[in-house]
Amino acid sequence: MKLEDFGLWFARWCGNSWEWSVTIPTYPHYFIYYDGRQLGRQWSDFDLTIYGDLRHIIRLKNKFPLREDYKQTYAFGRLLTLDDFEIIPNPDYRGDQ
Image (cartoon, rainbow, N blue to C red; front, side, top):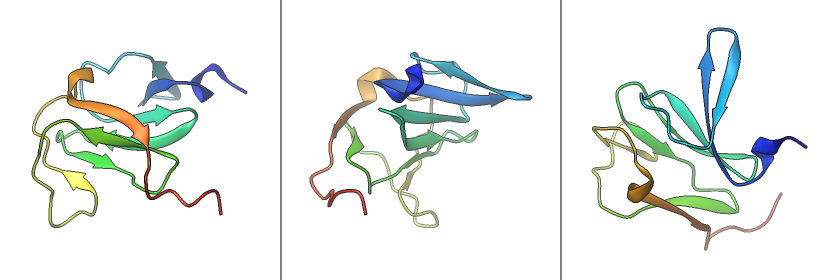
């Protein structure tokens, strides 16, 4: 097991390796992990994709417009902050298949 298998982590590809952090990167295009599972991603255009089929999910605290052309992607428009979201148990989770 790796340290990034536990808790909230952010990862971005930096040239030839992954850069892991417990703080949100200061620029977009990174992945959001919780307990070793990828829960979402903030793209370089600041859109935010949230995956909804895992044990835990990202719940946004405020409403952001959902992009009609991309499933589960929000037109976020800025960098994500820790005040924007929380990680919660997924009420629709049906267990590992």
